[in-house]
Amino acid sequence: MKIYEDARRHALTMFGILAMGVLFVIAVERIVGHSSIAFAVVAVALIIANRRSARYNCPRCGSNLFWHGWLPMPWPNSTCSKCELDLTQKDQ
Ligand SMILES: [Zn+2]
Image 1: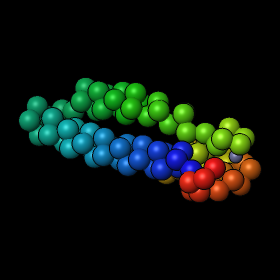
Image 2 (image 1 turned 90 degrees about the horizontal axis):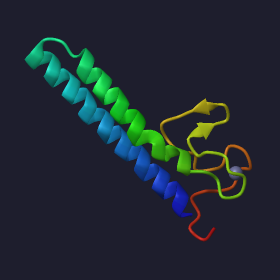
Image 3 (image 1 turned 90 degrees about the vertical axis):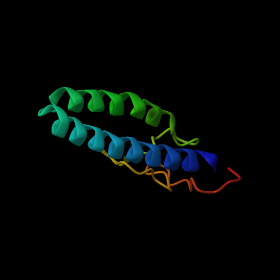
Image 4 (image 1 turned 120 degrees about the horizontal axis):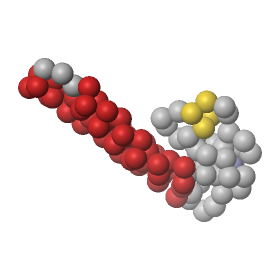
């Protein structure tokens, strides 16, 4: 199933953006001396970049792949947490 691979790719992209954001905040802190505005910019960028995560839903029941029961996680489920559909199979 393509949706799991897409969700996995989104999670890796988010980790990359997070790593770049941390480096950006550290660089601003060292250069300017404070990083509250840089931190806010990175937080907003992460929220905007993560809007796509709402698209990754189970094709059978509509449950989001990033929700493990009632807990949101940074990595998608390979099996739907609601209907237990295997989301890694390519033919579904
Ligand atoms: Zn499901």
